[in-house]
Image (cartoon, rainbow, N blue to C red; front, side):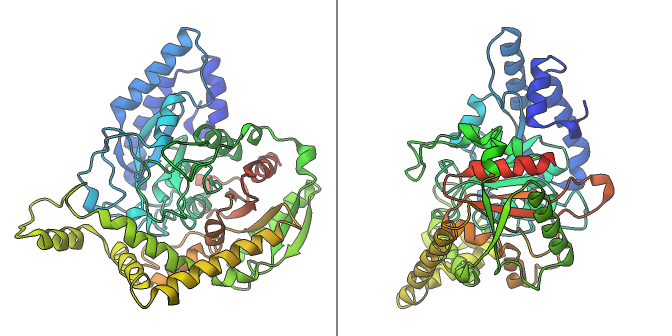
Length: 480
């Protein structure tokens, strides 16, 4: 079986039928990474020996007749802001270039307990700040569909790895669209779960009230399988919630046909790229063929979402990144340090990239005396209004359908000189983070790397902890 034919489900079935071993597939992925990733640049580091040992353990369990779970042996890539014990974790930043994790993130632990094989760590925008993966301190990741274009960000490495068939699945983190936007650009599936559905323990924090870990996969069914494996309550994350997700796989079509889908008029705007607009029409037509009903809705405070996000997020960034001072976690080597102030200034000045410095400065400003009430406090009030818009909409509909991005993947370097244009890439994804809602990006059709056609995705936003609605609709959409 070719790697590009595999899904998590088909891999598990083939493994149990002994059509191949976990070790054979893991070695095939490692070999393909060595050959292919020079073009894509998805990985920052590989865990070759650890991956082989994990795969061998799964094969031993099968040979001994022990029961294995649905993710056993699955070759998975992790965004490089998730800790793996004993592994380098940089968050795409020079300031953490030499940092070695001392424990596993909860999602890493759950993957290992489920028997998954961690292939390595993927590239990302520094501290997850970006929409193109061009802000990484180490390399630029390229879109597998067109190497002159970005894969999206900040989880661009994870999305590109899945799209290029150099990982069967991956995990990313989503603060304002960082799973869904690169998934749309790379023609794969990206799920941002409800805030609190997946533990953030061991995720290097960017914006703690917005961050959420989720899967990036080839199919919606795979996303459901991986999401179920990593979700749940965690004693190390007080925001995590104990919720039963047994119903996210193999949903009931009769239940799904009763769902009503809302189309917010504020999202279907004249500025949409024609390819995106045509993609939305295609997705809506396919869902209507399932017998689903649609209704136009209004989310009037959506127009403030981008402004609110770029006040709240930098404020939390400035707080979370204060810990990287060159003392506790890592230090830029070979600095001539005269005193403590010199250490702070040189380590942070040389360690953080331009985008990280921009957001730290902006966040420090909006939290400063005399500006807190004018900016941060007001933004939090408007955030509440955005949440209420969704609450009202969900009294009429069960799911909201929107575009993921205003355009297909843009060219490398096209927007780096204009931060505002870059920020607008997340205009459709940010509201779900501000409200804490689950949302998924699904390709409007099955794309092939050989066709060189730029992928388009559509977004489904669901009610709190109702991932089964958006995952269920997505699974039936794929079967069409």
